[in-house]
Length: 199
Ligand code: MD3
Ligand code: FE
Image (cartoon, rainbow, N blue to C red):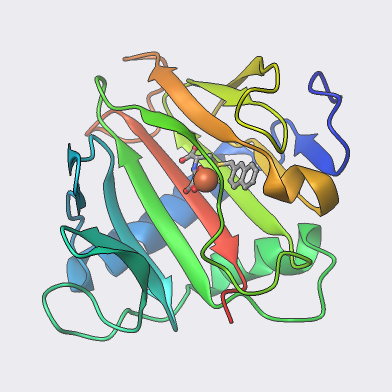
């Protein structure tokens, strides 16, 4: 099933059953104990999405700009990517290289992510793998140009999305989450994990 007919965009709906989702959430909780969610700042103000990361690098943003860093803003190294999450890369990504970053995005009910391109990685030939957990989210995907038309798609808990080729360079964002649409974790909201090769 690929409603979004963009080359290289593949969605695996419900790829993770509830038990697998819960196992990943448990591992994410452990990562977040060592590397708490932070609300990234930008020159335009704070983002609504809370972020953390696991792996050799995490993506951070502050008023100096945004970049991949080896350390959490509090100073500690990012925790390793949990095995349950690395296994998803092996299963779906079809990539020789190991992921160097598992970015953890948490959306409260009012959070969103504006249309953007992921351009901070050095090798765009490596795919990005995304895992959605918790509340449904309205995901928007455009083309390589900001002015290209966009299409929207609801992502639900357990969905896995693989971005390769042209789609890897496409503008994308999250317009809104549907509060209360999932019972996966008591805090509510939506977790999105993205696995990437950074260097
Ligand atoms: C399409 N995250 O972290 S995941 C991001 O749901 C990000 O939190 C969104 O955009 C989220 O940068 C979307 C799906 C995704 C990830 C990377 C992409 C779609 C993408 C890179 C290129 C094109
Ligand atoms: Fe992105």
